Image (tube, rainbow, N blue to C red; front, top):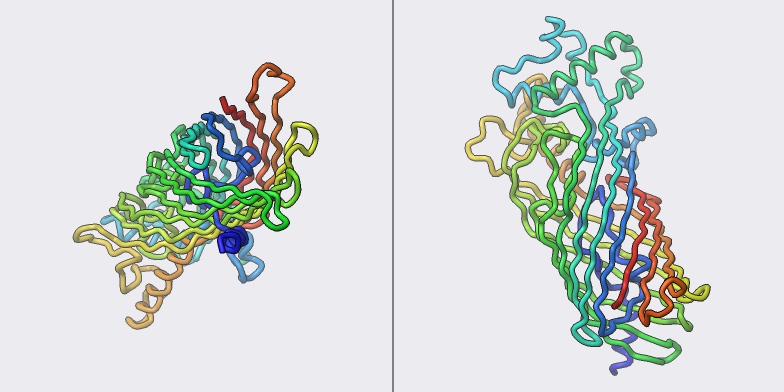
Length: 447
């Protein structure tokens, strides 16, 4: 009975991220890498330090849309299209006495009735240093802490025109439209320069219990266990002044990850594992940008208190590790698929003068459709509310390559030598998430 139960658990692809339950459509988090694919608990503490470099310049924002919509794959467009006409209509409603930038510069309504879709692009370069400590409690139980240090540079840029309907706009009007956008951003407290920040990430503590059996049926080794990971919201959240900014952790939320862990050695020194990560986050309430109607979340014209109920996140990472592929070199090959389900948002402002997209039942003046009947406007606001919630869901997939080298030649007198860990995580697909590629290098030492 115990053997059957063990084999059943092995076939269930259940595990959790040892580096902490970070849920971000910008920054990836992986359950496995070359250093952690197969580490059997030993009665020795381990310290690890790993550097990583990540870069992203676009995302996949739309699916099943006309071909022209694929022009809108910028990182700032993951929450919807940047429609300058709708931005202006929402801003005039949210800021009393605001004059449209069209009238301020021209004194007329030139271009004010056009949709004026911008391509809101961005590129992100992120450099991190992860500090990890593991402490064995017994041969089967270990616990640890992980602290990331992060430097991020997010560039923002805007393209116009990007729609074929706007190609007839003359060159002087194109330049004028960019000035309109800059003036409106200034009115809304948005800066034009790039976002650069140094910060710590979310501090994570974890405990893992692993049970090992040898020579069960045709398998040399079976490992089954469980892990609990908890991360605290110590990282910086997005900056409301920078549309290109993003949270470096779970903003205002604690992250909780529960799992079963199953690995098995199919042949000598060849291990297969298939982790499935389940992460939940606590409810978060904080000041942030909030759209009045159709503008994306990052460009919301309102600043106010918002409660966010995060959706669940699943991550599946089957992988294969070949230990001692060449002497003291271990190779790692894996696949990662992460899916985040939609969040829910609540407007907690007290007696707001301007309704948000969460509370409104009619469209702002000058918005497309503002002249429709009441029922039609209610339908449009409900549709917009559901669409924004849908935009908070995302998924992303990776190919993972890694190598681990035991530095025996450099430390011949040490019983437990340090290991050099190298990794490449290449994004092969994303929907409403950054196509962020990552390379990493680090050292770990069990002393």
